[in-house]
Image (cartoon, rainbow, N blue to C red; front, side):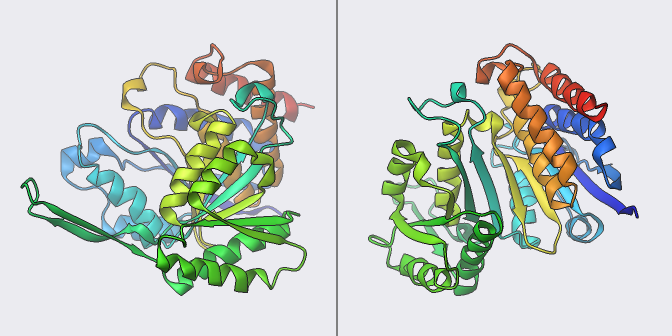
Length: 357
């Protein structure tokens, strides 16, 4: 029996966002023969253009609708030099994370081809990990401010927020994910040797980990974690950490597998609408030049498909991206020569050929 139609909201955003999003939607169209349900897609105008013309980034009613009227949200990228403070990007992107309580930021880093890693001697078997970043607390909570801005004695204060509830739920999510995906090791990164508040992470990690027999757990200070991620990436399967450290580590991990152009992500809270976006930014200097890599947006679509229950479609997308990398059908950042549209065309055509048998 056909399930109810999946309701997808699309926020193409700024810079290269509309270009990479167009390729993801091209792939979504190509993969439809694999669907078990129907789809409705609604493009939403949120971004710098709208903000500059109306002064509105996203209204409370629009944010509420994102949480109630859709099954998933696909975002291209947000950020525009015409808005130097990036107010609209914070309102929209951080707004979704905080106001929709999308406390899980999931960023996988899987090497598709040995040619893509800068680490000598590492193979595709060596680098296959996922970072779970707490997405609603930490320094990104915005507690603090600026006093005497621009003056010689200017003072700025930023406070890091960690709650027992917030720390426990992201750690438990990481262990649950590891268990359901057959992983045997979870690593937690903090800076408890210098930041006393991080003892909360240590205590909760130990307590929650006791509930998961068969899963090895270990802890690293964030500086050692960054070093070891480069030195021995094969040591890691699942990494869980706070908001700021997760942001930094996930960019570092993406470099191990080819860079931000191939790095997808998901923002989720089980049972609620989830938001998916490439890890890269809006890259305004690249906009309109047909050179941006759409693979991160397309792989974010694959994560979206899996989340809404379209596993066959997700597998088809991931397989097509892997085939593109193996065949050299890539953009310049990965060593290829194809433009944004041509990469999307290649992947879409590969999916169509798979559907035809």
